[in-house]
Image (cartoon, rainbow, N blue to C red; front, side):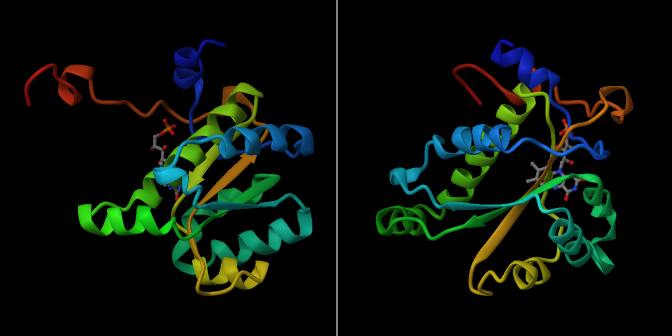
Length: 181
Ligand SMILES: Cc1cc2nc3c(=O)[nH]c(=O)nc-3n(C[C@H](O)[C@H](O)[C@H](O)COP(=O)(O)O)c2cc1C
């Protein structure tokens, strides 16, 4: 599919099919993520792919308990990808402090979108998940508490007919202009 068509086709999926995702496909998503650009080529990311059903359910119970219940739909996803934000390279950190810009978060956004678009191309659905109990996720996966997890990605097959309503976007003339503000 042409890139723009693929981008138009992608929607957040919140109801997944009970069908395992082939490791080969997950590896292709990881390859797309791995090739993402980053500030000073820092590559400040690590991915923990949880596709063991028992562990994934335990993770979801922990991540989406209490305040975070709104994302319990993730339990239907056969795969949860935990994205660890690693420390950027020294140069990127100093530059970021100087500019007041969190470059590492831009980097994490790009790598995750690479992952998500590759998944879409492979016929898989995804949902970015920013609302979860980070401490509980670390505890289940034995990730040191001093690590930062900014985002999870739910991944799996889905039924396109059952997708929720389209989320509209601002028109281009409202978000972009040429040659002046
Ligand atoms: C950084 C980020 C965090 C998000 N966190 C959540 C979340 O916790 N739960 C959820 O259901 N969707 C989450 N989403 C999905 C957005 O709600 C969704 O992308 C947006 O409403 C546009 O809809 P669409 O993806 O179907 O085009 C998140 C998206 C992003 C980019």
